[in-house]
Image 1 (cartoon, rainbow, N blue to C red):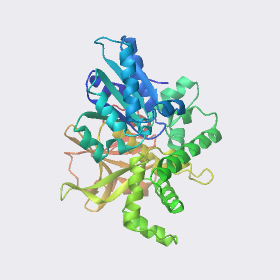
Image 2 (cartoon, rainbow, N blue to C red):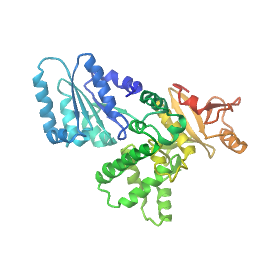
Image 3 (tube, rainbow, N blue to C red):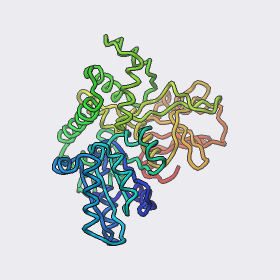
Image 4 (cartoon, one colour):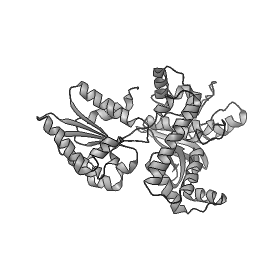
Length: 397
């Protein structure tokens, strides 16, 4: 497994802190691997570590609630008396009843606590209120392309941009031999997230409605939605679902990191418009496994991976409205603002005019960028054209 240096560098300054280190992200994005890489680094420095994986049934049977977890760590501390700090790693800790009470107590001991979980309930309002700022969180995502390429190279197999546009960056998907095996793994992962993690956790009664809405959203990535527009669409499919129910279902998908919502930015109000969003898949494979045959949606998947790359690079991203004309992304970091348009190709004149004209009337104080899968450079005096293969290797815009 590759060392995910970006995330390791973010976590390292907090190794000795008494803040609870919370590592979150969608299932199978590599949280446990990062947790073990942190532990390996500490053990190499001769630090005392304890690792508990609560996805394992024997571990859950022995340690099932806050009291048994606290008692177990206490017992472990007693076996190694002295002043040395104990580094405690709790993987998928949401499987422990009242886990938040346990970690709140453990941080008062001579410990440094690291926890992972697969849903943002780890950062719910109740949890943050109880911890009163005594935690720091790190969001882990599936591989961006440079990581997928490195891991595939490690596995001794090719993984080109075309593969990534379809099959995305879940680490274990890359380990599968052939597209059929990859698709089967991804379908099983999808079922685990949708059925086990969400339908069971939230006791969803109208499972068929929830699944239809989920399928519609995930196969329609990189489109602008409102809860009402989704409700109206489902009614057109003879499925009655209220706007509040749609909002609730969207929240479930966001809490499990299945989707990313990007709000619209209004230059007039200089604020985000929270009633319309563009919805993106956490990984483009969640779109591809819902496609019949091999007519994969490369155009919208390309925009989706550009968003994921911008988030990976640390940008705050919104959708920009240029006097009613949509520009895909307004990306801001360190006081610098970039306006970014994404298209699969601008080789044809109609596509070229459509994409470049989106920047009409915007002065040159803001850097304007178009990203496409073309190999020809279409840059102008006012707009930079980035080839997708180059953009996916950039550390800065």
